[in-house]
Image (tube, rainbow, N blue to C red; front, side):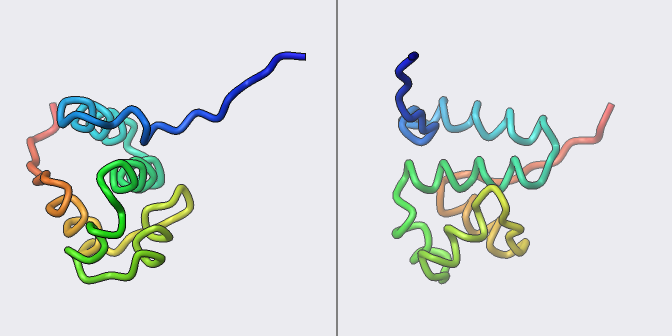
Amino acid sequence: MTKTTKWDSADYLSTPKAIAAYLEAAFEDGDPKVIAHALGNIARAKGLPQIAKDIGITKAGLYKALSKDGDPRLSTFLGALRAMGFELKLKKAA
């Protein structure tokens, strides 16, 4: 029998460069659920309770919104990005 260990991406999101690459990959995927889940992992890595407080939402509400089945409101999404030190910029698709 093969022994496995639990893998949690939040454990590897310890630098701004790693976080940016992870978030960029989620956006490249394009699936809103993947993006929300990635933001949730980043929030857990950076301290979900403080991020929730910074954007004025409960910890449980933020966790639910940024889960793999979550669908955050735009204000929650943008607030979470800002609280994590990111801003959203757009460029015209090729």
